[in-house]
Image 1 (cartoon, helix red, strand yellow):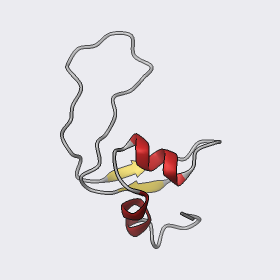
Image 2 (cartoon, helix red, strand yellow; image 1 turned 45 degrees about the vertical axis):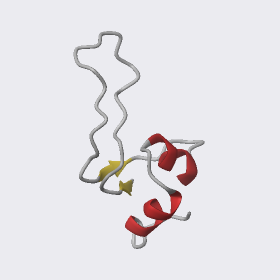
Image 3 (tube, helix red, strand yellow; image 1 turned 90 degrees about the vertical axis):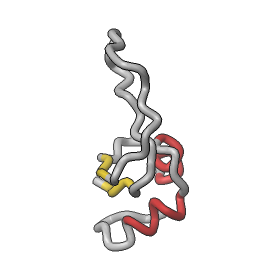
Amino acid sequence: MIKIPAGAIVPLPTTTTEVTAPPSTEACIGGTHTIVSGETPSIVAKKYGTTLQKLGQVNLHTKGYKS
C-alpha cells in the first residue's frame, strides 16, 4: 500500500453501473492505494492526477516503494 499525496484527484470506482452523482474533481486530502500486479508508480500518479515526484515524496519512508 502506498500513500497518495494531498491534492490528488480520487477517481470514481469503475465497477459500478449506476451513477448517482457527478464525478468529483475536488482534490483529496491524501490517502492510500494498494498496488496491483502490473501497476507502476507512473500509472498510479496518472490515475490520481499527481506527479511521480509528489508520489515519491509522500512515500519516501514507505516500505518497498521504489519510484
